Length: 315
Image 1 (cartoon, rainbow, N blue to C red):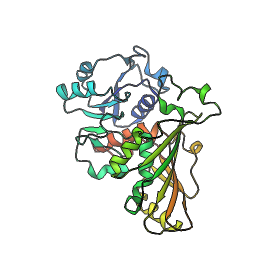
Image 2 (image 1 turned 30 degrees about the vertical axis):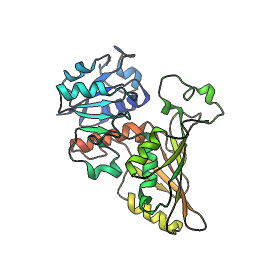
Image 3 (image 1 turned 30 degrees about the horizontal axis):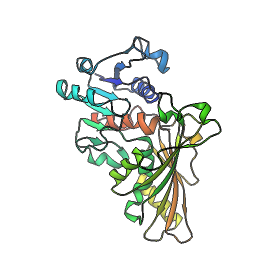
C-alpha cells in the first residue's frame, strides 16, 4: 500500500517540483496539496504532471491532521511552519514531517537532513529539517577538508532568481536583474550561519542573484594548515563521495547551465595555489532540486526505509 503524502505550500517553485517527484514515486501517493492562492484548481494544470483529479486546497493546520496523511512536507516561507508542526504534534504525532524552511535547522530535536553528510545520525526521527540550497552546496564542498582548514572558508555564491521565491521583490524581478548581478546579505546570511553551525567552524559567505531562473554556483576558497597538491585533493574528494550517486566530481569547474534540471550536485575545478596551502573549488546544484525537493525526497526515503534515491532520476 502506498504511503500517503501531503504537500503544504505547493504553489511555489519548490512545491511544484515536490509534486512532480511524489507523483512519479513508486511507493508514495500524493493525497493532499495545500495552497491558498490555487484553491480549487487542478494540480495537473499547474504542475505539468498527471495528478488525476487532485485539486489544490486551502487548509488550516487542524484540517491537515484530519486527512490521514502519513508524510507532510512543509514547503512554506521561513517563519510559517510552526502552526502546522504544532497541530500535527498535538493531533497526529506519528506523522513524518519534512520542513523545507529554515525554522528548525538549528533545533537539536530535529534531524538535519543532508543525507551525504548526516545519514549516519538518522535514528528514526519523525521531524526532519531540510538544509538550505546554498548551505547544501557549501557543506558538500567544505566538509571533506574541515579537519585540514587553518582559517574560515570564504564562499562566493551566485544563484538564479527562483531562489528568491514567488513573492515579488528586486531579487526575482527579471527586468531589474537583466544584464545584472545583485549582491545581498553580504554578512550574516542565514545560510552562512547554517553552514557555520553544522560544520562547527566559521564560514564567510557572499551571495548574489543573477538573471537566470534556476541553478546556483558557489566558489569556495579554503586555506589549509598542511600542504596538498591538486592530485591528492582530487583523490581525497573522490574517496569521500565515491558511493554517492547524487554527487558528481568534475576535473574542470562545473557550470550552472549543466546542472539545471538535474537531481545531483557537481563539485569540481579543484585548484591548489603554488604554496600548497590554498585550495579553491566550485560546487553547483539546482536550487529547486538537490537544493530542496530532491533532498526532501532523499530524507523521506531514508525515514520510510526505502532506497534513498528511489523515485529520483539521476542518470
